[in-house]
Length: 411
Image (cartoon, rainbow, N blue to C red; front, top):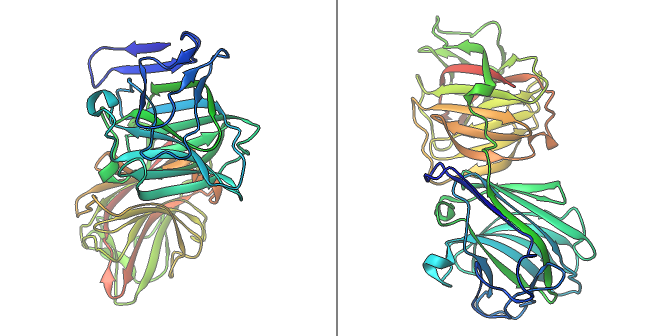
């Protein structure tokens, strides 16, 4: 079953679902194709796609499908039965890559969601591949919430803006990670290819590959509840802010780190919001430009003491989505959820917005999301009500100042 809504790319939406009941029993046929080594997959009498074991593959042989979604926000779901056992390391991988109709079997620069089994655990991994075998970068790995052997396995993969991948197994969230710029997906790079490097056949019951609405909300969900342009006499910011730490204040109409003492300083406001839908938007610079090794931050879901919260850490050439677990008025302990360390440049005048919405976070630069992270409230409660800013000084270098700030509530 397939659908097509609207006809003009890039605004067209498409999707297809295959439950394998319309094919004759036997080897696969178009739009499915088998590429490279291994045994060709079969449609069986139970309405399944049987993907034969290819543990000894020499060039990554497997099945691929001709069609693909049209838009940058899309998903794939499938259900498999995979009776994998034994002490050998084995895997079943769903690659996303260029269409075989365009490049044949010469697959390169692929993004793979790997289901892996070894003697100690069943787990999933998101990786980038220069070819079917060569891992350029493992982006993340997470334990499966269910044992593979003996269970129906419903895998859901959502891709946001062709750059951020989220994974669920049997409707349980597993994890997420960004794709690096060199491997970003896109038009004609959303096609699937399977690789069954296990000793057991994989039985696929159905597969669904579809365009979907973006998870990132548009501005209609946000309502401004505080704005400050710091355009007042140099010095303390005053009410309604709480400043944590010394050596910070208004300089040249920007909230800035001051003095020559290394450390971090925070500026928080009680939003009273407990639903975990908050947006902090601020303009970089005014007094101090971004630095490569000294970070400023946008903060959401902080407690009143500034010892727990979510933040986007900002450098001139990199950004991080993190949580802090010690006081932001000293040397805060940061745990990074996601990093973007290449292909990004932050300069004075850029408007950045750090948002938490429906359990995930993202950072916008001049209105465009550039980094995402999931499971925001696994360690930081949505009920933390404070939001604001951070500046600092590291090894004698000052972080950027903030020229203005606006805080929004979400619906």
